[in-house]
Length: 297
Image (tube, rainbow, N blue to C red; front, side, top):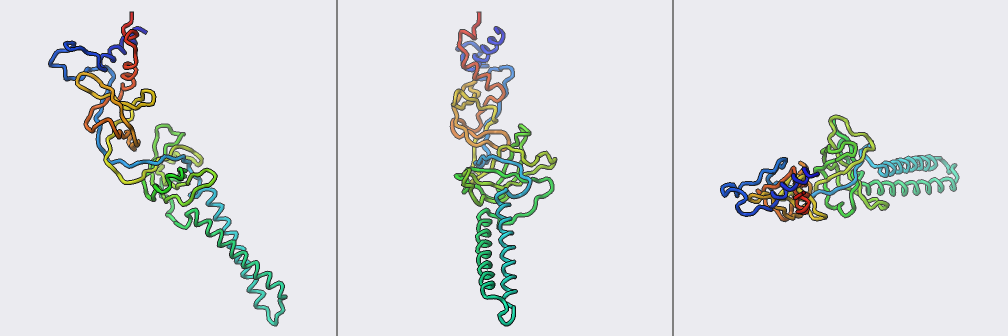
């Protein structure tokens, strides 16, 4: 216990407790070397915002409700064609051999079937099914991402996407949005988005779930740091920057997660600043450690 507290005490000194004269003057500007700490430089990169949704690997390219609408249209069209044939047969009977009542009934059935087919066609169009896209390429699979209706207008076809399956923690499958969302499910108030995901090793199985990240909007210049550099003091995100001979904590505002594992810092940090990555959590623990506990007996 004392050994652990001693290590934290050393780290606490590095966080900002040195008095003048504790280190030689020629070393005053050099960062204190704390074992196990690693640093990285905040960089500016082009970055787009992302929309997060619930994703699931689909056994087919269409959600079940779209397939149901397509089946309803096929049934309505079959009924309409049958009614047309019946009317045509009755109308061609010579000398009025067909009873008038039977012909009227056939014409009424045709009108009803045509109306049903029209409604089914409109319903299917509402699902966006009229926009035909190509088949999957080799090594691709379908993922259906469900996003909030507030984000529907931001999603466009061919936008970059990522799928993070629960079955493979830490693994990311990249892809592209196949088509913009065409409807919102009134029961869940979410919109299904069809995503082509690259899966060359055929690891994904129908029904697997995970997080879907869809890029939206235009790219902008953003300051990013490795995700490990951002730690939280209660709800406040912060980083530790290399500041002369110590590691100074700095409150920041974080934004979008970058595809390469880095995270955007929207405020509180300038590009070119060196930040602690590995060991940032230890620095935060040391900063919280009471002085009496660090001194020991």
